Image (cartoon, rainbow, N blue to C red):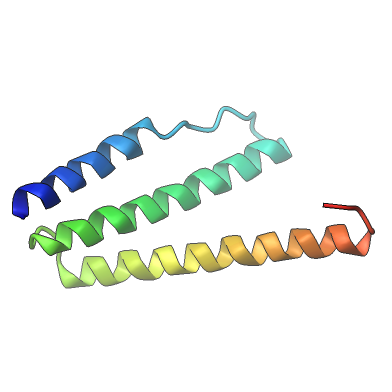
Length: 96
């Protein structure tokens, strides 16, 4: 069981290292959005890695609670931004 969890932890770390990085220029809106999404994905990955690490006592409870809270706040922020974008499109009557 511990070997499977350790394998999952290393798999998450490999996935995190393979995540494409933002190549947008500074000051561009697309670069800003890309950086924000990259940061959100990184935060969620860190939460997943810490949660799997805690199963084999490789992470402290405080670190786990912090990571889960950060991931939850990131998800709420992404959902709120998505809702605002949809609302803006509906206000200007553009089909989605």
